[in-house]
Each structure stands twice: as structure tokens, then as C-alpha cells.
Image 1 (cartoon, rainbow, N blue to C red):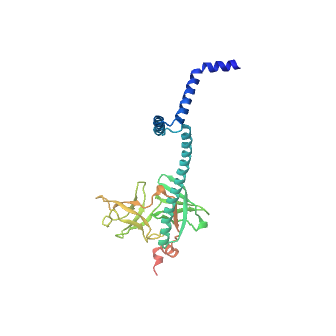
Image 2: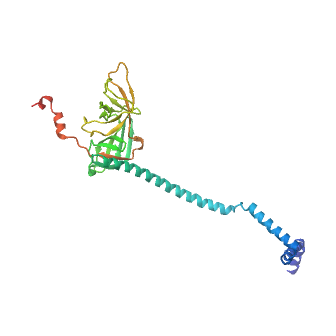
Image 3: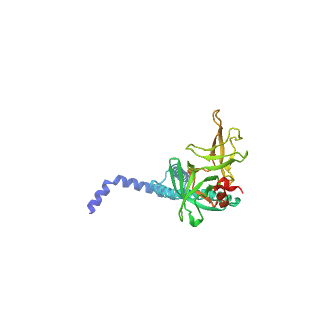
Length: 280
């Protein structure tokens, strides 16, 4: 054992001698207060401080990796929270607009959320989470804060199916708000609605607001439908070709109101009678 220790010390004698000399030098520098020693000590401390300042930006690799992992997890959580808050804000804005329309309008409304959608060719419909239990009946209009969206086509106790204006089966009696020109709103599959049956002599201009008219028994009058985008007139045609941009964005329809509007039964009964029976 002693022999092995001796061999190790003999093998590392140069390193041990160097370590002893360095240690002795440090001890001598520490206990020596001569001006030269103080200057050397100051120079050494300054050099070490400079080295720390220069290489201090080099981070601990493993510590940085763990910190990045924690920060990524926090970022993901904050992103999800921001997304939820943004969605809640947008929903709040939409609902406040709808409630504002509800407060300013003389109609009675039932609020509903769109829970289903069907975009069959030329026959767009939505399913809403309100039915007969909430007072919804077949034929009642569907609206948003932007205007008329469609009408109720089928009802169950807790759900209803509404036909949108993007549906070739829907017709709406309408008028131009400015000039009081009457026509029929319909859709034929393009990007806009059409105001039909308007004679070429009538006053209709781009930018005019179109709304439901009092001639309709299904829709109450005064509900905004859209804005006239384009008016065309061909020499051989008797009627104007009028394109109307709907106020409702059907691609983003999420909340709607059902107008609890019932047609006047006395009027319907009178209009359904033959003409000769109406005269006294």
C-alpha cells in the first residue's frame, strides 16, 4: 500500500510541485502588503472581473433548457386563455348588439343559438336551440342585429329549423326605404339577393336601404334586409335587375332572434275569400 502511494506521488511529482508552488505564491501574495504585491493583486482582481463580465452572457445550458420548457408551457396556457377571452369578448359584443336591437324594437323576441347548419345546393338552413317551449312557431322571422336572416320552417319542442335568405324557397315582400319602391326579395344562387318585379321607371339607386314591407303577412314591416349594390337595365326588359347585398353575414351566423310575429288572422281570412264575397 505504501509502495503504491509512493509510486503515485512519484508519477505526479511535477503536478504536485506546481500545485505547491501556486499555493505558496497565493499565500505569499495574501500576507504580503508591499506596493508591488498590492498592484499585482489589484490587477488580478480586475482581470477576473473582466473575464466574468465578458463571459457572463454564456448561460447555463441545462438551466436554460428547463426555463424554456416552463416558459413554453406558460405561453401555451396564456394563449389558450387569451383565445377564450377573445371569444367571450366577441360573443359579448354580438349579444349586446342583439339586446340593443331588442330594446329599441317594438317586436317581441326569443333569443337562440345556432347549433346546426345545412348548406345544400340553393337551400341553406340552420338549426337553433329554441322551439315551441320558448314560443317559436313555424313561419316566424329570423333576425340578427344586422337585419333579416330568414324564417322558421319546422319546429319541435326545443329546436327549430330556419330557412335562410340564401334559399331559393324564400320570398320576402320588400321596399326601398328612400323612394318607397316595392318589390320581392329572392335569391337565385349568386353572391347577392335580387329585388324583383321593379319597373324600369322606378327610382332605385345603389346604396339604397331595402327593408321588409307592410304588404307581407309573414314578416313585420321595417326589418332591414340589405343595401342595393347594383342596378341594371336592359333595353328589352320590363323590370330592373337589382342586386341587394344582405346585411347578415350568413357565414358567421352564431346567434339569432326569432321575432314572435303572428299574421293578422282577420286579414288572412279576408284576403283568402273570393273577391265577390268581400263586397257588401
